[in-house]
Length: 383
Image (cartoon, rainbow, N blue to C red):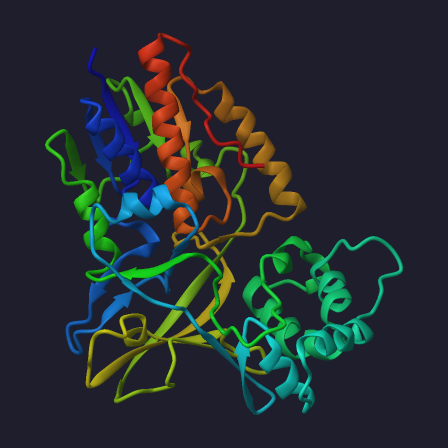
């Protein structure tokens, strides 16, 4: 029996689920509160310069998941792109993530890989107790000088909190290399969609069984008549924030145009504490196969998310995790509603992970439907 589904949100997670359901022969209504698809990875051409701009900040596709890579290539052509990041600190420009060049440049040395490992081991400060905070992890890993220069100020600006109040897991996501590899990511597949992410997501949603409505927020009371709902909107918003607001950081972008090349790279971080912004992104460098006489540049400023802001990064500190547990309990009691994606599960997820979880969610649901088994409603546990 064919069913009628509602997908709340037309970002990556919602688009993938909608496509999978439609390919299985079901009708899908997609409702999106914004005036565009693709969520925070929305891209569009700047009218003045022709540059493809990442309107909510840069998104770089990288993955080791061969199925996800094959999946996205059905909908667009990807061009090779190796993301490289620089940092302007204490009057110098360095390479990030930290590699052998960064270490040698910072300390004025010419260390080999084994010598650099031993050198940093001597720089490191052993904690007196278990490593619990971002600062504990950074100092135990890098020592005081590198931590204070590259991480302390940037972290305070990015998260609005002291590094001693942030979990060590934030830093563990960042690589430390003892070679001269200056690529930001290590994954096998690293690329950019030639026509941007919005074009890719639009093609995912281009199916005769998918109906899309933009500028259409959905409330919990609006879902009558659908057999099942896949919600990629914020889990606390779904419940009308009845228990309170989960914490997010948002970004403010200060956009300007520049004749020629402004900084010579896509991303320049500014970790110095007296600099008010976190980084500058120059968008034409995200499409190095194109040529543009002018440039579109963003300064990024981070702050706590207020009502009406676009959420970017879940804070996920102790208070938020406790509140999230309460919302998960509510979600598990919902009938015929599944939550997924960054906002639906209150996690920071890379794009390939969003796609993988959306594929798995849709397939698990369709398999249960075919077998006559109970339908999973909370497919991805967010805690």
